[in-house]
Length: 437
Image (cartoon, rainbow, N blue to C red; front, side):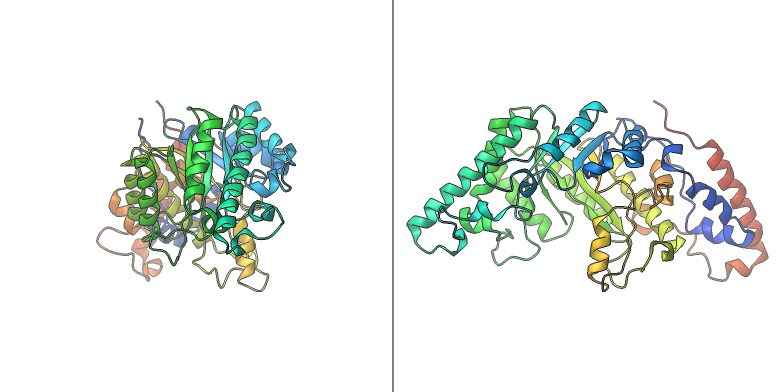
């Protein structure tokens, strides 16, 4: 396991010092470099974990495809491998779009994550209908309820068999069950009371993993995937479920932490604790759907256009990415992959969420590359070489002895300090290089 030295991030103090002497142009030069003009992210972390991106098939070509080949060594389908896309009608499989992603990964020597075999959402209604087409969850007769349970588990087995037999030689990690834990639930275990759960209890989880092992083989890496895995009580509910199933011999190999997070939530310590808890069960961790939203939840108000997002937010986001990737490197003995839920800011589900809460108008910007495929401050912070201290990771960048005074820009002494910081900043850019072995 190799560790590098991360160059101290100059946002916060440096930005305040640089502003009086017009040094913002240095930042501008950094940020206007195109994604294909800078060092690959996957090479920066090649000794720690894979760097992945979620994609739609159209993104395998053109500039998106070029960025994928330059920066990433792992892929996951954003939508086309979910149940409703693969088997919209019972027994009728649509492989074309999923095949494109599998082929691209193979052609470019990339790992492939499969997302997802079983989920409560984006699963066609026929899965949960009895043989007469009635909703299984509405059945009240005990004998028919048991028959419906058997039928649903048979459909689960059949779907997993078809998918795994087609892709078992292409896929490196499988999201077998996605989002089994609820944010709030009426049951003490915190289980999501989906149609899967209402008809089968927790048997659908056990059966899914056992079927995946049966059809995928012993080498298949099988994950349970969820969001907010850092936050109690959801984290503890997931842990209790996984611990119980592992004790029962259910073949779970790892936990996928979606990591749809924000600028100041969850804390680094909460994320660290979650990784260590599941690693303590002997399981592998993967970050599976990383994006860093500029907003809290709900995301209101949101900036109406991308151009209206202030540079200061991108600098704050850069600090957040610096802290996150320092944590990921710290955990790399048990963390095997970090996947972004997108490639660049031109395509993100977070725009849909921003629009939903702001009368159809709103933009987010969660990634390292902007809407024009230029690098953002987040890229530079991720590529730096010095690991910040735990205190810096928790508290952010501060001036020794306290916060920089708000009036610093009016003080000639700070102007001189700004000139020195600008010189230092330029020197750091000049000597920036990838870690060597």
